[in-house]
Amino acid sequence: MVKAVALFSGGLDSVLAAELIRRQNIDVLCLTFTTPFFNARKALEAVCQINLPLEIQDITSEYLNMLKSPRYGYGRNMNPCIDCHILMLKIAGRKMEETGSDFIITGEVLGQRPLSQNKQSLYIVAKNSGYQDYILRPLSSLLLDPIKVERENFVDRSQLLSIHGRGRKIQIKLATNFGIVKYFPPAGGCLLTDPIFSRRLRDLFSHQGDRNIRDIELLKYGRHFRVSNECKIIVGRNNADNEELKKLATSDDLTFNTTNFPGPFVLVPYGKETDKQIASALCVRYSDAFAGTKAHVLCLHNNLSELIISKAATKEDCEKWII
Ligand code: SF4
Image 1 (cartoon, rainbow, N blue to C red):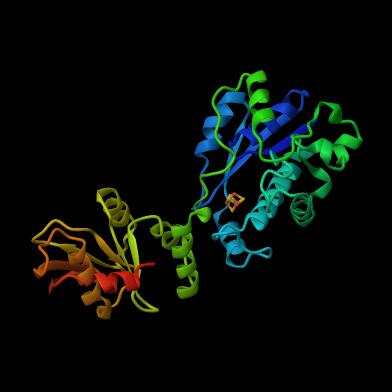
Image 2: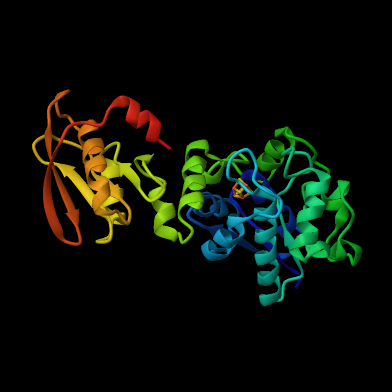
């Protein structure tokens, strides 16, 4: 039996591409990836609509290596879309070999995204993945050169499509024909396209050479203040942030809480003695302490506690430090 591995984000295009090939009696395994920047939630929901097997791979370590210096650079934010596609296709190619499959399917549509899905980009990602002749884009195949499985008639090219551009009409009609009623938009869900997250990530990359997954997870919560090259202070914005930051804190960090007023949880990753006054002042600033009042702040470090009396950081300082 002919077998394929489908790169499966869970977006409508990836669902249609996989389903189009499955309808040719080809055995399709869907493959999706997780990193700290995107997860498998969409893929898990979407795959139920077409009843295909889904494999989820955590590719964090390879992804972080690529993200340090993507060969084709970043998009508008910290999204290295071309290198990201190359990496995903490389991993899908390895899965194809491992499972004895014949080709890889993607839901890419020619011209749908001006930077990462023009003809040149599709060519670049395919070539750099090392699997150029094995990548089938069923939604736009008729606008592209036939690949090996088409030339050898394992795939009936006449059943493939020639969709081009950003419109969604053809996809929506196809989804209706396939009985697919619930679907996600093509983009979304990648934190690397978020401007605030990207600013924080850029700051992390430029101040901390040796970063780990916890450092990246921390970027998702609270307000972040860069007060010196060595010191970054994170202030929870609400209960949910406070709880997440508490879960991520380690005994190497400094943590702060106001004791005589309700206030945020403040975390200084890998903090030092010298950071205590500024962190206390930020803690008071975002607490319910009355303006101009000094508040009591409890600092914990390595299981030792210290009570600091501090007034709030000024608005100007906060604006100067915020990332
Ligand atoms: S948006 Fe994110 S997940 Fe999608 S291709 Fe770009 S970097 Fe990769």
